[in-house]
Image (cartoon, rainbow, N blue to C red; front, side, top):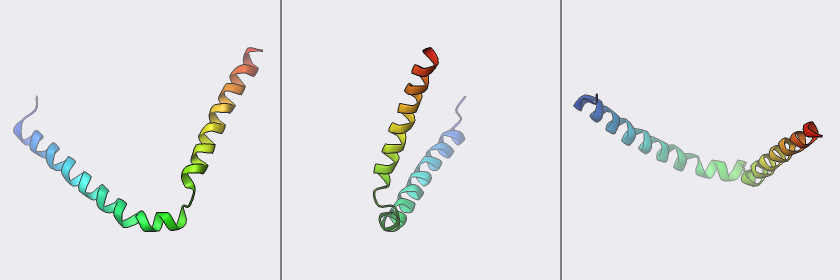
Length: 63
């Protein structure tokens, strides 16, 4: 099922992908801090609002 070539390819892919993701994150970290201040706070508010709307719709449909 897993040949030596597939295992080597998978290992190489995971290593290269991880390195590129870390490089990209470090490159964009300063830019993200400048342009996306308090972004996590707004995302959390959005998620809570969506969950609240789902519970509200469930309540309204049952009654």
